[in-house]
Amino acid sequence: MQRLLVLGVVVVAVGFALVVAGAVSQGGSSAGGVVFIGPFPIVFGSGPGSGTLAALSLLIGAVMVALMLLWGWRLFADREE
Image (cartoon, rainbow, N blue to C red):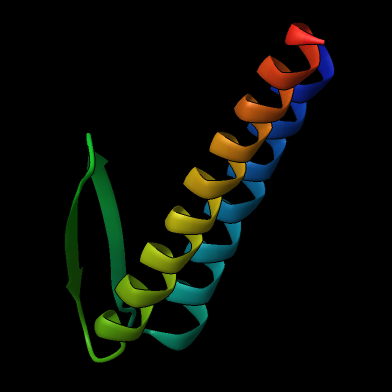
């Protein structure tokens, strides 16, 4: 569990550094994202490529939710046997 926490912090730090480096080197940036509140997604974005970024983050979020559901069902199925 400790390794997973450290890996998550490292991935977030590297992603933040890449976003900052990209914004500094190109001079402009666009952002987009999705926040899930229960089953309802809130999509936001700004800049020329925000629609694509928001759609991509929505797709990634949906895949992550599906994987977590499948993982949970698998864990409970193993306990019932």
